[in-house]
Image (spheres, rainbow, N blue to C red):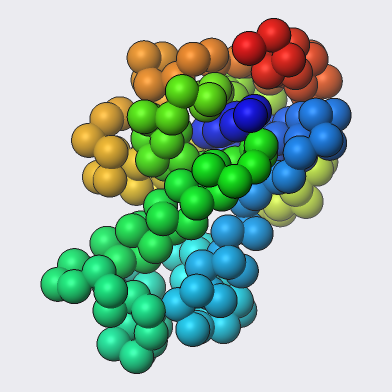
Length: 202
């Protein structure tokens, strides 16, 4: 069984690295795909989940939109948890189920923490300097903004707040992962090469 979780700074190329790695290893890749699975399991529409996934987990929109479905869907199985906690619990359950059944690459969503007791998991974190991330955001993600640096740092903060809240750990800290890779130094393919080697040697 090969299970690789990938945390990443915004613009570091972590998602691209994860996709390429999954293709090389011949295993499934999960990122936005988890939204479709969670939506189906909860009874809500994938479009709804994708919309709220773009918002901060503690945002008013997130709570209002998900709240319309929480009492009439399978999310009631999580009892008296808050709406945000129910979503986290649902996604965690799905991640655990997937990891029991198949080899895969999972991006974000605290997967490293959710699968912390699973001996088959390799946890990676992809980072890079701000200049490289600005360039990638402009060239590959086609983000146009006069304040693109602020946008990148704000995106990182949202990810950090979510991760820190649900794990009790600090997002991006070396001790949380088995390996941290600088995509600015190694390049996308270089990062994929390293992770492929580790996965195959495990």
